[in-house]
Image 1 (spheres, rainbow, N blue to C red):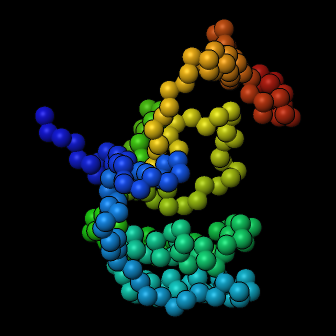
Image 2: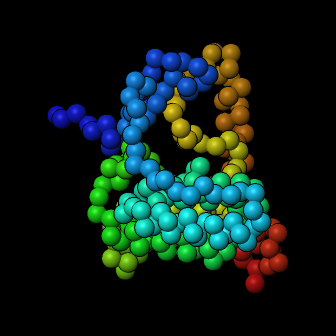
Image 3: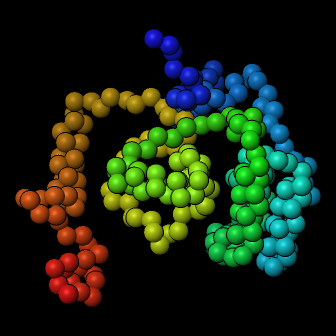
Length: 239
C-alpha cells in the first residue's frame, strides 16, 4: 500500500525548538525551521492607516488595483490584500471599522477582482504558498445541495467551497456555540495528556450533564429550542 501524501493529510510534525504549548509543532507542508520561506510577494505602496475612513477605502481600492496589475495568482492577491496582515487589515484594524468596510461597496469590488483573477489563474495554489487541509463532516442533504449549486455555477465543489470560504461569515447566520467547543482547534496541535483516574469521575459527570441539556431527540420528540420560546408564535405547533 502506498504511503499517504503529506500534503493531503497535512499532519503536524515536531520541531527542535519547544516553547509554550503547541510551539514545538508545525504543519508538514510548511518550510522547516532551517529553511527559508520564499513565497511570491508584491512590492505595493505602503498604506496609511492614519488617514480618515473614506481615504482608507480609496487606498484599499488603489492598492488592490496595483496588486491586480502585478500578479496573476489569486493566492498572492488574497494574501497581500485580504489576508491576515494584508492591506485591508492594516487599514481597518478596528473591529467596528472593519465590519463597516466589509459591508461597503469597496469590499465587494475587491472580491470581484479576486474572482476575476481566479477565473484566469490555472496554477496550483501551492505554487504561491504551502497548502493546508481541513476536513469537515456535513449532512448528506447539505452535500447534495452543494452538488446542485456547483453544477449550476459550472464549478467543482472544491472551487465552490473556496468561493464561500473567501467571504466572511455573516454574524446573523452563525449559530451560537453551546458549551465547550468540540473538535480540533486551529493551528498546530500539542499532545493530549491522558486524564488521571481522579479526574475521570468529574469528567463523566460533566458529560452526562451536558448531554442532558443538549437539544436532542428526547423520548421520541425533538426538544424545543430556546429561540422557539422567544418567538411571537410560541411553540412550533401554534400558528
